[in-house]
Amino acid sequence: MKTSNLLSASLAIHAAIVANESDIESLDRAIGDGDHYINMKRGTEVVAGMYNELLPLPADEALNKIGMKLLSTIGGASGPLFASFFMSMAKVIKVNGGNNPLEIAAAFAAGVQAIMQRGKANVGEKTMLDVLVPVSTTFTLSALEGKSLVEICHAIKLAADIGLESTRALVATKGRAAGLGERAIGHLDAGAKSCQVMLYTVCDLLIKGEN
Amino acid sequence: MKKFINHLDNVLVESLSGFAGAHSDLVSLHLEPTFLTRQNKAKNKVAIISGGGSGHEPLHAGYIGYGMLDAACPGHVFTSPTPDQMIAAAEAVHADKGVLFIVKNYAGDVMNFEMAAEMLPFENATVLTSDDCAVIDSTYTTGRRGVAGTMIVEKCVGSLAETGADLLACKTLGDKVNTRTASIGVALTSCTVPAAGRPTFDIADSEIEVGVGIHGEPGRRRETMRDADAIVNDCVDAILADFKARNVSVDNEALLLINGFGATPLMELYVIYNTAAKLISQHGVKISRSLVGNYVTALDMAGASITLCLLDNEIKQHWDSPVHTPALRWGM
Image 1 (spheres, rainbow over the protein chains, first blue to last red):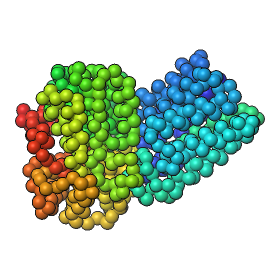
Image 2 (image 1 turned 120 degrees about the horizontal axis):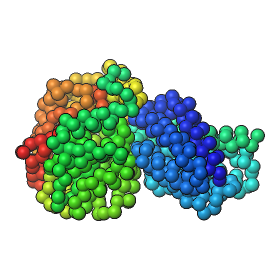
Image 3 (image 1 turned 90 degrees about the vertical axis):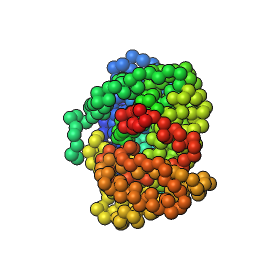
């Protein structure tokens, strides 16, 4: 994994979060407390701002620094969750190098595992995991099948869409919407939405790079 | 949005600086990372630290001082603080008897305090407050929310810590007070998070949100506005039903806290008190302690919460003991 690619993705992710402000915010206002967009913007902005500091570092060190920075910047539930994701991903990249899709899929899976452990949450609780877990599975399976990078990216985008849509029918059992009971049904989860936006951004960037 | 703001990014620091300036005899403000401590560091006691998103003032920094907290860590508005704040605060105030964190039961607060606790190089424990009985079916959630009852936990645990009690004793009392406390809130209007610039939820003039949380997150149900007695009656029923469901016997004396969310006048809070006290007395509970005012707010939300804390001799003793903080002071 090249640090320069990672950092290009971080700039694109920040731009994509800002571009999706109204979608993310209206979802959070419906069943959350209206701070999710502000926190996502603050987090992605601070990572984008680390560009020059991170560029000379190996990818695993850059990922770890991103995690540490998010931990002390975002706050809320997103801070520890995204921090755990990047710090765990860094540990795997440090060992395997992240030089092909399968190695990156393994690091991604470790990051998702860390979110599940920190949040004591699983699929089906109307959270970001409803996007991240199926994406992780799709990522690993597509890489194992030896699909091309472009094919993997398309598969991830589809899994992210299906995962996001799955949150509509769910009752929230984790996070701020957990107090709503059945009133949360019919609304998409804001955290799942911002993950879908970020995954789309990275995949589109990679697809564009291959064409 | 019409608020006293210079620049959105500076609201929190300017507010904290004003707070620290106004109460410079009691608290000190530390920046990067942000936390507040007692002006004079306490010795030979468990350090009591709380924290959470801003916007609930005077919670938590308003309760720093003798008989309550040693330090508080404010996050951004409605967003939990980060672990580096809790670690720096703990390092500043710990006095070799351990650190007790008092944390409201929200996913973000729990995770950030948990990571701080894991990284802290000395003995620590956590009391999670979860007094909000608004959530109808507890199977839907990992836990109830911590709301206005949190300040009662902070008062009692803070008092016990001043006596030199150890960490386990302080945690045990905190857990007990939490178990014996139940709250429910009603919102008449939404609050507006400064950075969002518009109300968190839409609510018609004819509607109320019953079971609202202290961040303007929706609660039990949306109802039609009625007279105060009818609303208070439902709230008191919910609180008593909650104690019953948790097998906490309600046959003693109690502390009744009527807490304003930020934009409801005291005049109305006393209307609520008047009805709530009567109704609770009819259930054979003697209201022997009372507190009415804005203690755990939700920015500019209109509305109030009712909290009932069942007293025993120990809790009563620690509620009554002297306290000297910016927002709560008696006996000294």
